[in-house]
Length: 242
Figure 1: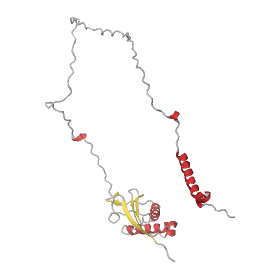
Figure 2: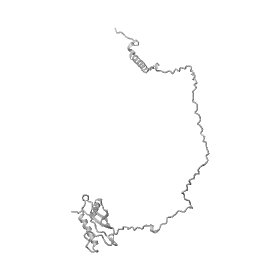
Figure 3: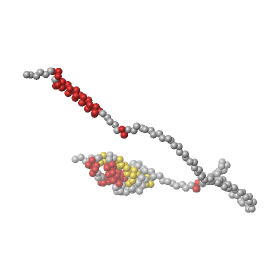
Figure 4: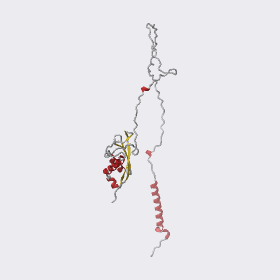
C-alpha cells in the first residue's frame, strides 16, 4: 500500500528559500561585525579642567643699598699775579712776504752776450735721383762721375743675384711675388733703415737678409757734405716652372 503525503506539510518543499534567507542574514551580521569600530577609552583626553584656588604670593620689598653719588669735581681757580717788568724785551717783527699790486717785480736784464747760440745741423736725406755725388759702391771708385750712378746700380743688382736664395718654405707653399725694398746709405756709408713690402713675410725676411750683406760704401755728398741717401730696389721672387 503506497503512503500518500500532503504537499503542504512536506518539510523539504521550501528548503531552498529558507537557505537563501538564512544566508542573507548571516552575511548581514558578518558585514556588521566587520564594520564595527571600537575605541581605546584610556587614550581619549576629555579635557578636564582642574580649577584650584589661586594663591597670591606676597613679594617682600627689599632695600637695595645704592652707593652715594661721587663728589663734584674740584674747581681749579687761576690766580693771576702781576709782575712788574724789570727788563725791556724787544719784540720780533715778522714782515709779510706776500706781494701786493703796488710792489714792482724786478725783471732780470738779459744781454745778447748772455745767450749762447749753437748751430744745429739738420740731417736731411737727399734722394738718389737728385743727389750731386751718388754713393760709391766698392769697385766704382775709378770710373768717371757720369758713370758712377750706373756703376752703383749694376753693383747692387750683381750683389742681389749673387746672394739670392729662394726660401725653401716659399718654394713648398708656392709663394712668389715682388718685394719692394727701401734702405738708406748713411753719412758714414753704412746700410740703415731697411724697410720692405711684399706678398709674404718669408720673402720680406729674405730681402732684408740680402740688403744687410751689402758692403760699406763711400757716402753720397750734397754741396760737399756727406748726407744720408735713400735707395729703393725691387726684388722679384719667381718660381721656375719646368
